[in-house]
Figure 1: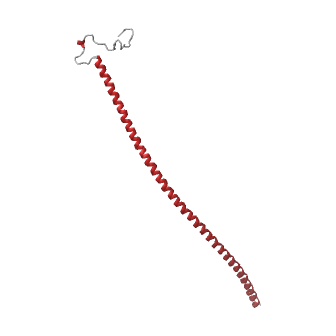
Figure 2: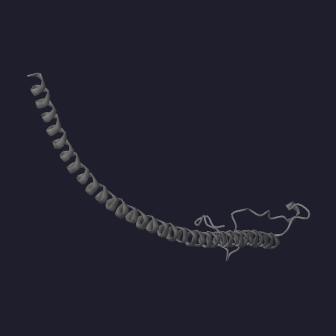
Figure 3: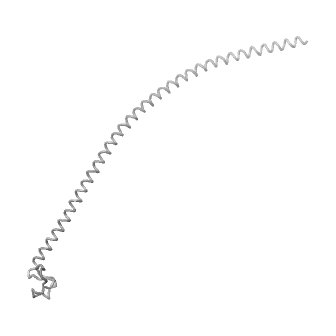
Length: 153
């Protein structure tokens, strides 16, 4: 490493880690620099493969969850359509029954109005008969009163 440049130059095979000049100072069985670089690169590639595999596993789990959710949504849509069909049929049946009730009520109203009209004319007849009977009764009372007065005198 040069003293003017603190960054190591790979072309000159400079490194920040000082290498012992004497190979006898390197522990026995320790990998050489090139072997160590290959081991580090291999480790990085292995870690990247693990990360990529994790992403693929997560992606497949997300796809499975999405498929399950889409299935549930489709089932809910089918159920809602069935409920809507059932509800519409019940509404139509209820509407028919209500129309029947309205017709029946109209018929009963017509019948009731005709009976009221008939009773009204009978009440008018009875009222005129009562008026006639009242007039006749008053005349008889007046006659009886005059008869009593004449018998007293």
